[in-house]
Length: 320
Image (cartoon, rainbow, N blue to C red; front, top):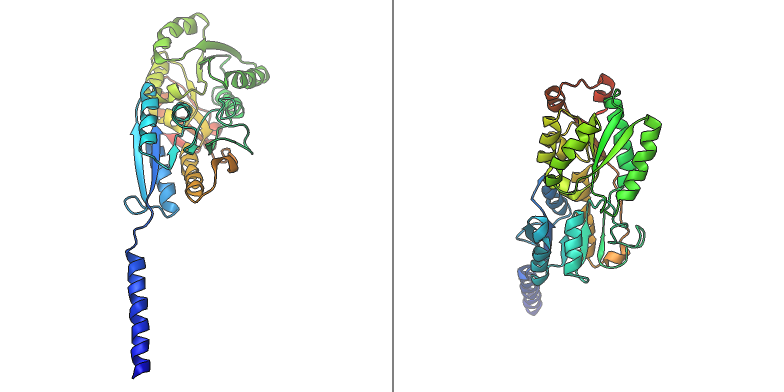
C-alpha cells in the first residue's frame, strides 16, 4: 500500500511540474520593420519568419513603421524606444536612418544597393558593428541589364541614364555601364535625376540629345516613385529599363535584377540567428542568388514596340 501511495505521489508531483512548465509564458521576441511602404516583399519577410517557427501574437511581436524618407529617422527612433530586439531595415534609406538611431540594436538589411560603399559594413565576410544581412551587386547587375536592354531593342544607339551622382555606388555603376556600352556600341547620356521633380528639366535634354531609351540607375527614390517614372517614359514614347519586377508591374518596359522577395525572405534567417544569440558582426553578409527578368508587353504595345521572340522566351515573367 505504501509503495502504491509513493508511486501516486511521484506521479502527482510530476504532473504538477509538467503543468507549471506548460503554463510558463513563451518568450515573445519583438522585431521592428522600418520601410517606406508595406509591399508584397514585406510579406515575404513575414513568411520567412513563419517558416522558421515564429508566430505573431505567440512568440513574435512585429512593430511596423512605414513612412517617407524624411520621416524614417523619427520612425527608427520610435523602434529604439520600444526596445525591439532587431530592426529589419531592408533598403538603403531605411538602413541609414536605423544606423543613426542606434549603434547597439542589431539591424538586418535586404536590398541595399551597395552595403560597403554606403558605409554600412566593413566587408562581406566581416561586417563589423551592428549591421548584417544581404546586399545587392549593383554594378554587375546594371551591366547585365544594359545587355538585355540592347538585345530587346537591337536598333537603339542612344540611351539616357537617369541617376543620382551623389549615391555612393554611382561611380562603380557608371564604370560598368560605360564599359558595356562600348562593347554594345551604345552612346550614354547621363542625366542628374535625384527626385521626380527633376524629370521636367530632363525632358528637354532627352529631346535635344535624341535619346531613344531610358535606363534607370539604382536609386531608392526611384522605387518609391516608380509609377510616375513609368508614366514619364510612356508619355515620351521611350522604352525603359528598371531594376526590379515592381518597376515592370508599374509600367516599366523591362526589369532585371535580384529577386527582392527572395532577399526579404532570406533576411528572416539573419533575424532568427540574431534572436538566438549570434552577434551581427559574426554573420557574413550574403549576396543575391536569384534574379528576375520581367517584360511588360502592355507597355511595349502602348509605345509601339515589338520585343524579339528569343528575348521574350528568356523572360521569367511576361506582363500581358
